[in-house]
Length: 396
Image (tube, rainbow, N blue to C red):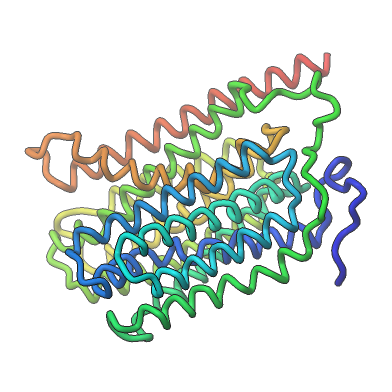
């Protein structure tokens, strides 16, 4: 199939179907090195014979690079040629990932990982902007999250199979090879620059700084922080309850299947049930999962709790991304959503330390998750009412 027409599909009815499919592939495969980081950072530290604590620099460099790449897209979105930008970002991510294994020192590896993250950030933001401008962004985001979960499973199984610390180059080749599949998808994008739907009628549409846009993005960020708390501390809670590491790992792996199911369900329902009921259901499911994490839980209860929170995570993120996209006429805020998710997942677990230690780990994790979930839903409700009221006034 040839590249899409250059004649303003985005300006009228959103991106063409081929572009949306390409954007889904870009968003799904573009996250390859990000999901590899839990194993990749440790592998790089071993390969360069540095302290394990220094592996955190690898993850930080990649995250900062990803954030800068997304900001680059956000600032220049209206002037970026999609196809060329995506091809450049893909090649940068691949070459930099190979460079991690080829540079002579650890500092060089950190720099290469930052460049790889920059390329990935461009790809993720570009994907979010294109899908956000489509006719059914909820479904597109759901498919992206589904593909990302599948990529995570493949990558986290493949890296250990490639060997130990001496396998840094094979791992780099593998990760670069996965990302090279983005080149055909990039070719399906248009050459021209991005023009968001509604841009020609700015008097009838809010800017990216409209309170409803920012509040819904904030709700998405806070929700990401809530699920980040459970993702980081689920294993800790299982260990405190006396569960084996093998059982914990298997439960979380099975839970990823529930995450995929949640994303696929979000793709099926899209906005046909409105916005409030699905978001409330996701938040209640997340709250229920927290209640199941108890000090006396057995492995079966841990399986159930993990599956529930990962189901809520997989279904909630694409749903809330679609909610932001529908009120963001410029797609600039939408393009930042992948970075907001990673930032929220990093900040959420850090907030647990703010609660008094005397309360115990289970109580601290539960209270933090409950507060963040309630705050996320509250921000969403305020923004939703604000947006509906303004739209109603504009029609009269």
